[in-house]
Image (cartoon, rainbow, N blue to C red):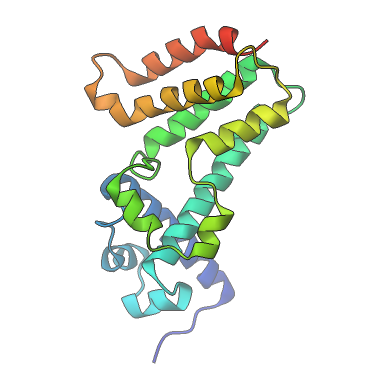
Length: 192
């Protein structure tokens, strides 16, 4: 018979599952993250896992939700008040740092990420915009910053900058410094 958990235990276990899944996904990818390992790290049986989630994909969906909430909080805190283009650059730098922590999670074109997307419920997928540009577009819109260039061009520039993270091992210089240098020099050309 399955062990019953108090509400506090359930919440703690769910938080631990999400945290361990995020770490494993960032390090090994979706396919190589397995439930047996996650359950062992959290201290529950695989059978008990199904008291919390119906599937591995449901857990991964919660991980995406937690990450998106964290990114939104970073943006809100950085862009509070009357934001400037420099606040926007700071927010983008913080997002880039988050991308670096979970490289495999944010590689939307990676076959491993696509395998995850192909297994998630369509209702969940329709509620989430899983690309780097949707959030950036929203930041610009809410900030009321004025673009000097066409919006599509600005979005392409920001997408290209964020994609540095996916090619960081091919760069001959520190990818953070490259990202920061490019952003700091382009921000004047993109915004009023």
